Length: 322
Image (cartoon, rainbow, N blue to C red; front, side, top):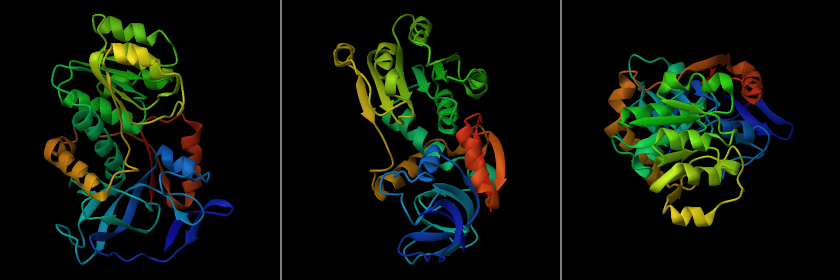
């Protein structure tokens, strides 16, 4: 089968052996894939958790049809249309655990479906489960113009946040954040954003910040979070190391929590997917929670898809179809 593989000369479409499902795995005939920032790094040889390096079939997010099920897979059967996340997505066939996928709603095509699995699982966990957002509370999404960021805005609004703040350093994308639930859009590259957030919250700061940026905004986040508020660190696109004001952290008694799928067990990931199904799946089925597709590329043009991502001018998801 054809797959997009990182090799000695970089990433390229290559012929590889078709996998077979074992245990609780299912084999999925992939029809569409969503690109993510971590994929871009892996095309350059970077590791993402335990994945990466020579011989790696790239990709983390897909939609397709179940072709075969392992002996211990439950609740699924060949022919089911599904979407999910995991490794080796950029291929004609991929393997997935039976608990790490969602059934694709009948009103959704493969291109639309492949944009959702990582965004809804990551941000439901960060905003609701770990972030503990309650109706009437205030929330800020740092890096809100990414696919997962746009989903976080929508989930926060769905769960009854009284004020949703989104940040983006790009003026065009910042101007569109209100379409996805932001009541206030700020430029996190401008130190004045903290004062804007404080002014919008009567000087108190927000109850919750979901941070995909960190780097230089780490201590600024502390100033923008209310006493006994929460910060959930999801991403570090602005840098993995920076100044951190420990005194301010202590004085404001902020709960600071880091999350990632890279160190989670399959049992933990299954639980996250279960929580999504229990809590917000009707909003997915009704299309209340959805992401815009910026551009669709054929699998043969996947290199161009990554060039488009690296240009960093898109809003929404970049999709590759097989």
